[in-house]
Amino acid sequence: MTEKITNDKELKQITKSKRQTGLSEVMKRMKRNKLAMVGLVILIILVLTAIFADVIAPYGFNEMVGPTYQTPNKDFIFGTDHLGRDIFSRVVYGSRISLKVGFISVSIALVFGVTLGAITGYYGGKVDTIVMRFIDVLQAIPDILLAIAIMSALGNGLGNLMIAVGIASVPAYARIVRSSVLTIKDNEFIEAAKANGSTDARIIFKHIIPNCSAPIIVQATLGVAYAIINAAGLSFIGLGLEPPTPEWGAMLSDGRSYIMDYPHITLFPGLAIVVTIFALNVMGDGLRDALDPKLKR
Image 1 (cartoon, rainbow, N blue to C red):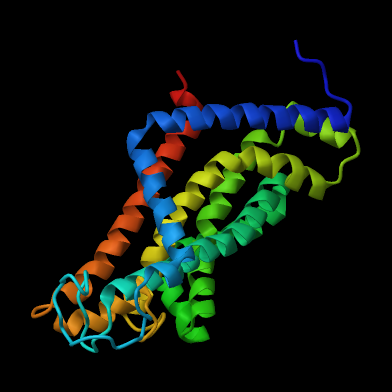
Image 2 (cartoon, rainbow, N blue to C red; image 1 turned 90 degrees about the horizontal axis):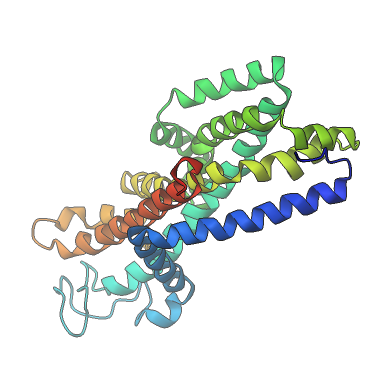
């Protein structure tokens, strides 16, 4: 029988050891899921493309380099648009913007959602009732509609787009974290931390939230995909980033007038969105399966 932990240092060492063991098991289970690994490889390629966009793209994203409406050929592998810009270069630069929007939006949602969910789950009572009723109101509004309302109030721009998409995602994270906190806040190691004189803030951020990391990681991975879709949707209807910014949704909006005669203008930005969302979704599903204790063999 495990002895009661009375030393805070010992508690942290045991927790760290368990985390390292758990991470090793998760990676082994993740490697068994071939589709998830394909998603991970695609995501790594996309991230490297975004980082080295200046090297990979043969032209500037707004540089008019050839005849207009060129279909894919040896000189322009994705063709050119109605202004003679290289679509491949714009898609490459667009990966930088779309991934940036996705990751920063999720970071904003994580900061507010995890904090609210942890506090309400830990304290309960009136704090829980007041905050969660507010979360219920936000959750009753579809993410994209809430983001549209926020963008309408803040105006267009990259920063405002990330804030709008991030805030619209807060309710989902708050609920997930709250439910996780409710299941572990009465565990023995939390009682031991209280007995050692740890403050509530230390218990929440040092002990509770790290032990809620599995569902948070899965939701964040899938959340990046939703954020990219929402950002592309907002740009498509003119509430996100506007031309000539090479954001994939803005590129779709910019090329929709030519879709019947020159479908390649919208085809490749659309494929970029599809491939990115596919990679994030299958990787998120793989993480969920790897982190689910019910699926352990």
